Length: 175
Image 1 (tube, rainbow, N blue to C red):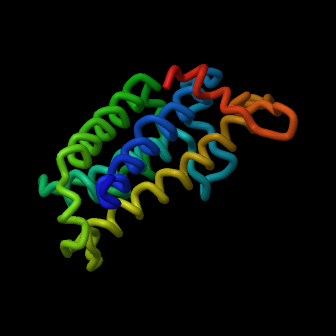
Image 2: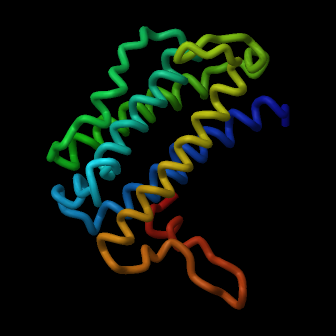
């Protein structure tokens, strides 16, 4: 397999079939109010992080890589205090993920070295995608941590099998 195509395929898998599934699973135990809980005014709620992820992936991939108009209002992602219903927040994230997946699915690996300017930064397509996957993974970890703090329970994503971690989240998320 071509290395560029493998990078695109793996990026799509992480965004749509790993991070998004784990986020959905951890939200099952949270109320709409829990989605907007924050420990203090300097911290973000899960709801803010989900809006931020949707805005970030649209700006960097759909606009920056795919060429769509950039209409992001970044500060609004953090200013929202909700409670927007969980269904609406997830609809926004799912729509953004679907659009990102379409851009990455149709992207020619030969374009990975093409220059772009995104968020006022000089970058290229490869670095833009790498940034998005890393950024999405970091905030997924924050979301999972907040959900675990709020529920007081293990999220049950992994199970010990003789010293090896089995991925229980795959069974629950049907990926």
